[in-house]
Image (cartoon, rainbow, N blue to C red):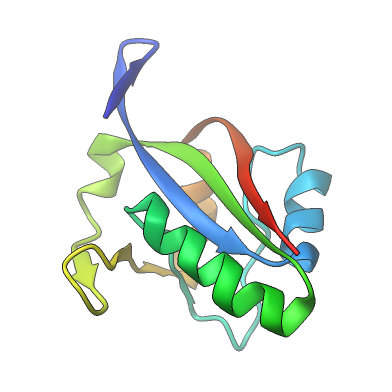
Length: 119
């Protein structure tokens, strides 16, 4: 965790493809785009290596490129979402329901950054 402007934040990672990344760029790197009807849950992950694996092994295969983004969210706000173990002990995710997504975006501190890129 890091402290940003007197508030504690938690780093999260999001593996993404080129289409979603372009939408983040259009939002000035400050928010994630609205969920589509077939996307009822937003899954940020708590482990950078897990995000790298998804971006490299899944996003590249399905869309030709994969990106890992890193962003900070207010820690107090994140407490409402239990950590979910999706496989091994480092495969940890938060499940944010689409109907809470605008509020989630409002608690992002700073900008979303691309930290890895795969082709």
